[in-house]
Each structure stands twice: as C-alpha cells, then as structure tokens.
Picture 1 (cartoon, one colour):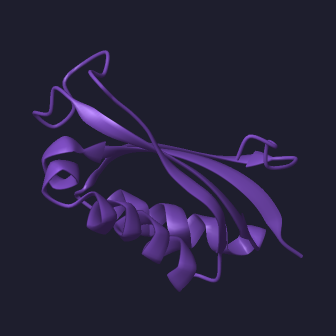
Picture 2 (cartoon, one colour):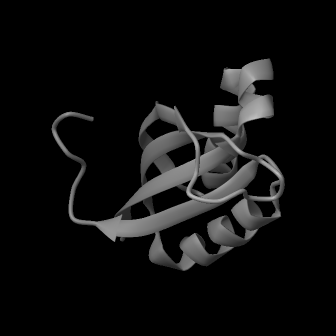
Picture 3 (cartoon, rainbow, N blue to C red):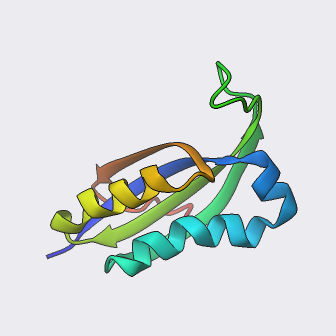
Length: 101
C-alpha cells in the first residue's frame, strides 16, 4: 500500500543556478531509488530564508508530490539529509495531490 506525500525542499541556490535539472533530479532520484513514484515536481520559488542556513542567504524551493510505501519514507529522509544540495526539507503525508498540480 502506498501513501501520498508532499515534499518542500530548499535547494542550494548555487547548484540550482549551475544546473536546475541536475539539482531537481538529485531529490527525485533519491525518492525513485527507494521505490517512490514522483507524481509532480516543480520549481516553486527562489527566496531568502528567515535565517542563514549553512552560509546560504538564498535558496530555491522545489515542491514535490510522491507516492511511496510508508516504510520507505525513513530511508528517503535519511538520504535527503545526507545530500549537501538540500539545505532544508519537509516531507508530510497528504490525502491527495491538489488539482493545480
């Protein structure tokens, strides 16, 4: 049984400026590697966070929706935390993907 998850990822702006597709795929490949299906992934916005994170004053947000077995989410989280391109993230269970996605 799979569950739908909404993920918001704050990516290193320097990496995004160098190659947006590679930065986006870094996150998506982690999810796919652990059996998740990517339903939607889009660039949300480039913003200044409320505070400096690891020396970064700006970051680009990636909004994703994935379907994954619940037991795989802990492994996905661990791999995301180890990726230096991801400054912060939030991965939450959701009932469904919004129609706008």
